[in-house]
Image 1 (cartoon, rainbow, N blue to C red):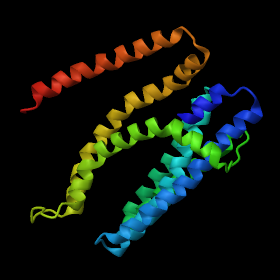
Image 2: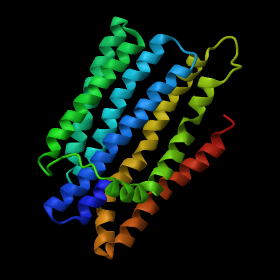
Image 3: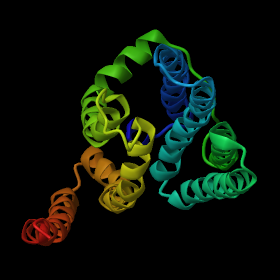
Amino acid sequence: MIVIQKIQASQAGQEREQAVGAVLGLRFISGLVFFSLAGLLIFFFPREQSFKIATLVAGVGFYNYSLTQLLSGIFQGFHRAEYAALAEVVGRLFSLIGVYYVATSGYGLVGVMIAVSIGNTLGLLSAWVCSRKFIRLRLVFSWSAYKALLVEALPIGAMLAISYLSIRQATIILFMHPAMPEWVSNEAAVGLYKAPFKVLEILQSFPTLFLAALFPFLSKYVIEKDKRLHLMYQKAFDLLIGIALPMLVGVIVLAPQ
């Protein structure tokens, strides 16, 4: 989101490259720090060695995916989201092929995570190559720029963190619960829960994708003080409420069944 705002607000090419490079540098450093901490943290859990190795491998893949998401902001900022879709498809397609091969060959969880990480890495490379059509990418290391970015990103980051914890809390509880029934392990409970929940996650992503598509225009209208801002915001709000209310009523009515 910050990348989109920087692209919309910066007119000169060099200024734009500097702003985007600072965001890229901050994501590069912060990603290394936090994904490394996550990888180290897993060794304090009483899990099998293969599970810990799979977590480390997954960390590499999801670190690369986080960089891909940042580059997607460049495409959205230039109103060329088809390149973001292309990079996403490349990454997901190779992940799907790799996971299918690993699953049918019996290589286990580590093999699955290697396949996913390779797919995510190829998605990142695709996004990197495509982004060079619009902007010259370089890492900018500037503490003063990072401080300004962190202040600007803090409300968005807090919102996303709370949303993520809200979605993941059930998985964390199942994974760490000390008194599971005898017939199911913590890992099996997580697997049983996550399979149907994955369907819900996909359905929940549609409003996010819808708003992500509108965000570059909303950002542009804010910067330019365009009168169309209020109309677009109102129409988007009306559409989402129109979809959400019937679902809410339906869930309440059908809950006993």
